[in-house]
Length: 284
Image (cartoon, rainbow, N blue to C red; front, side):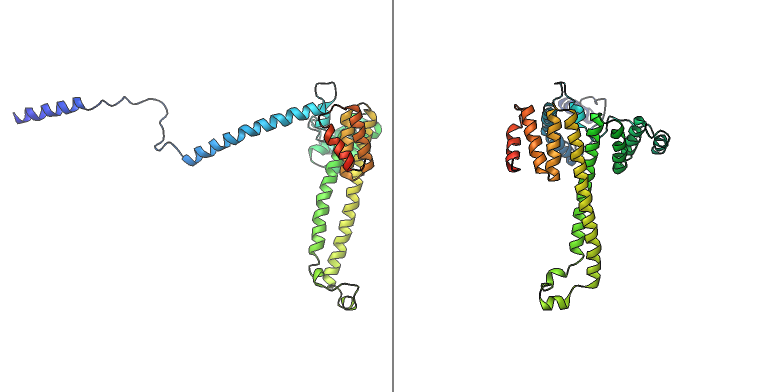
């Protein structure tokens, strides 16, 4: 009797408890829902990416609209001038150099050599090869654009070298600010440290040399953009690029003239107001 009563109670208790759901098939979830820090990171990344996509889309559209893509102008060429991303080398530098030696008057050989140098990030050599090419093909607008872009890139690299050399020159003579003026009798008698003097002399020569090289590179870039503007007299983009290069090079008269030519060719430009302010600030 006792056993029967116990079994009856156990049966009633089993009926009262809810039945467990059958196990779900598929991928098993990790206990705790995974790494919360990792989930938070990806949520933040997605949220921050959304406005970035919008900004990139706006800039992309504005750049293409400014460069005149779809209006018959060479917008892509202007946008990617100097980058040479549409040229595929496939030719080694050594073989291209041999071709120029064998056929020095062949423009295609110099074109291939310039592309080969660019694919190996040898900017100075690529500039030299393109100068040879444009001498043989003086009406190739794309090549002049590419050459000007490379010359601007070389100038900017030289600017960085100049700034680093100038800073090193200042650091090479740390005692100079502490010395009395060289014009005073005591200052002349005390003088500078011979070691500091030697370092400063060497670095000063380096700084001066880099300054000359930088100015030459900018001057060459402006000259190349002038050639582009001459070959495309109705191109507002060519005038704008010339103006930008001249302004960077410190050639204000050329920059002002190019900006005015740009406004004349494209008076309804969305950047007309800013360009007019630039002309005014440059003394035009």
